[in-house]
Image (cartoon, rainbow, N blue to C red; front, side, top):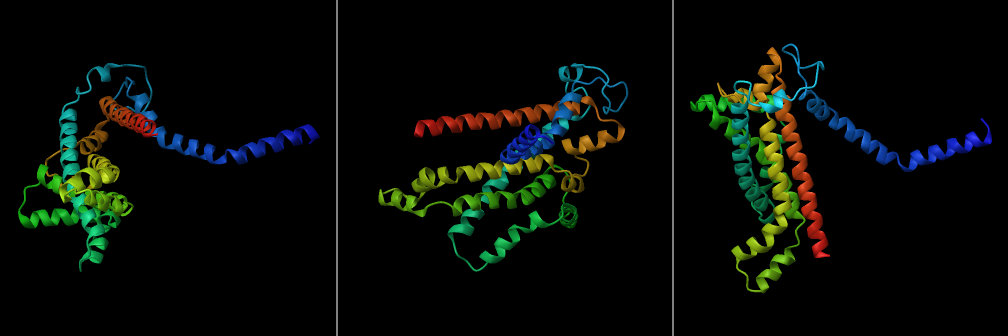
Length: 275
């Protein structure tokens, strides 16, 4: 190797060292997005058989009629309803529990802190079987309400953890200052505490929605004859996944990306306004 080649090699190595973290991050991001890209590409496929696993030809037929498969949009609507109600219930209960664990001292506090992590650490199949046993012993009819109760229960822990981390980082002097300015407890909570805790509450709510909508194992055990969107996808995969499933998946992915971009734009505008 001559001097010029050695210099080029050394420059390349130094460049890789300086940009290694960026390159590794981009490769990891590409790896994570690869399934979404494949789903998006195959949503425009026109398969010649039941299985949408091999590219045949470009077509927008599935996009023109995303509810063309019987039961698909009904299961999607049911999953959205369950996810919304589960998010609302888990967020309300989880926020109150998080504030209680941070702001108050009581005898059962260490035990509650430990129990909060159990649904996160416990295998889903164990939790699903336990909930099914509970519902059967209570004589409950499996369906919408049993799924909703189960989803609120396992989403609750994630909301508590997210909100608790935010509440623990709050400066109590801000609330004390509001009280010094003759603000009542409700007014202090509404105008000072809640806006500061809002990012943690929003993070917990988004996480709860994603977990609820995506859940299959716990739902499958406690659904009875009710079919949610993940169960529909699993059932249809046994006979041949329709292209419309890819269409729904792509639409939800694009919607999530747009929501993130909108939140970033709003956040940047607020930062510029405050600056």
